[in-house]
Picture 1 (cartoon, rainbow, N blue to C red):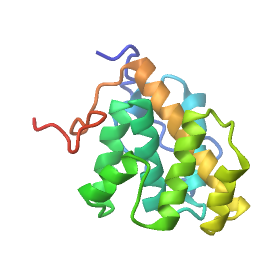
Picture 2 (cartoon, rainbow, N blue to C red; picture 1 turned 90 degrees about the vertical axis):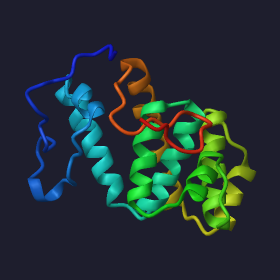
Picture 3 (cartoon, rainbow, N blue to C red; picture 1 turned 135 degrees about the horizontal axis):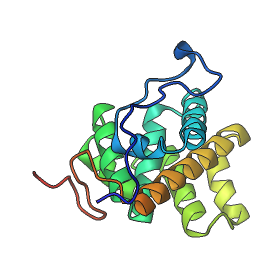
Length: 183
């Protein structure tokens, strides 16, 4: 059972100060209903997610990062949501499973996921070698800033959903499981 009450009056689907054509569509999910208890928190999340969706990381890269961070944090809600989103993007189970282990057959993606893992596990205290591997894989300072921003946004959602005990409204994917549980 969720610790927070869901806002039943519906979501403010547009962050304050934004027009409808500037914001990406907002999914109707339990996380956002609970976050809507604070219009400031909801608008902050939507603004950050919207801005990052306009960056240079691809939707595929952002989902792979989300999966890696959710697995590290044992975030059942986010694992389930991002597994569903990754499948909609056409990612297969092998690639999703690898991302959750912060690995990839693609060297650039592998470097990105290993960096994300280091950021999360070392709480941002990284060595020069951690950055060097990203630079050697072709990541610029701009992309590194986006990667760190995506990591931070995902940690926020992981923690929020853990604290709120958000009811999972996607097929449940448990940390360490290969695929969602059958209903």
